[in-house]
Length: 398
Ligand SMILES: NC(=O)c1ccc[n+]([C@@H]2O[C@H](COP(=O)([O-])OP(=O)(O)OC[C@H]3O[C@@H](n4cnc5c(N)ncnc54)[C@H](O)[C@@H]3O)[C@@H](O)[C@H]2O)c1
Ligand SMILES: [Zn+2]
Image (cartoon, rainbow, N blue to C red; front, side):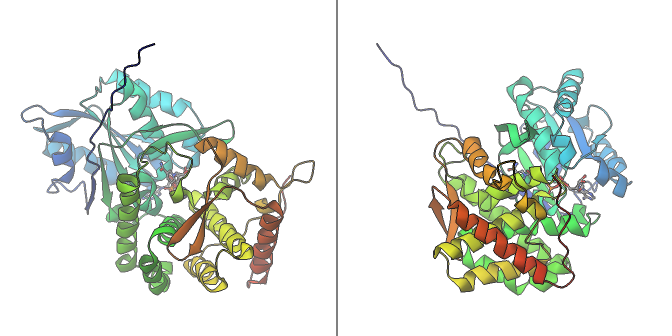
């Protein structure tokens, strides 16, 4: 039987802009992005903002409206900015996606108009899913407002929400039209959320860039004090490394089984779910990285010195490297976190592929994990945690 085959090539310019005070009337970045290629005809835009941000900065949404009013000849908002409660809860409820779809329908946002999401990684993931599925994809612009969203999640090409107790079960690969990172939007962030994003920078440094890892080590105390002079370059380099991977890694839409940027994530996703999202994504990833680092050392794959440097860096940045959810068991006495391995495999498809480390900056892929060794690694993290001053072991929940 005949077969028609054609190679289809799609070129995509992925743009992440760095600016400050994006909604100050004199800042042209957003206007120029939205109006590019549309002289004389204002583009329609729906703006969705993270409620916690809007509450923490009561001046923000009025300044968004004032920005659009100033540039009314080029860009127009279809309604006042809509604020929606952010955080992981927004990814655990499908009706939020329907709400955004309904607004896109009601205000006639078409494929040449825009949905802008301003917020943390969770809100961006949800709004991105809605934008990328309405009309098979209207343009969306992300304005990330957490460290994690600026240095990792917001600059990537994925959107999604959680379902069936699994992270990102419903989602799309759909690059945003543009991303705008405005460091000044982080000022109202809690210290907890400022810190959580550091871990994605440590992660990408561990697998890709030893010099960056050593730079983070040199800045660890300043980062622990949330000094802008250290945070800004950390966010920039982490975003750049994530983008480099997407653009040049050869698998932007993750067709293969490997996902090196998910170093430390197989356990992390499971821990987020087991903790009922008590743990932030970044906090769970810190524990997931620690687990895989100790595991790699126990296997003899990673030398003790780099392993200790990674654990010490995470601790200096203020992360806990243990959570009681690591000890949760099912009725058969099997560690629940171990189910994360199969769920991770199923999410990626194909063969189980976990990235571990051979050295700082050098990732290595393995296709199985030795469960007794995982248990030993967990026990080591538990003992390390208990030895730290002021440590408490949270009561075990069934
Ligand atoms: N799409 C991807 O490629 C990708 C990659 C990594 C992580 N993620 C996802 O990102 C999510 C985590 O994102 P996150 O770490 O940004 O947390 P988050 O979105 O849950 O935000 C944390 C909290 O901060 C609030 N907030 C956001 N910005 C604020 C600000 N400037 N001031 C005050 N409060 C603010 C939010 O409302 C929320 O309560 C997870 O769901 C994770 O799975 C996605
Ligand atoms: Zn992550």
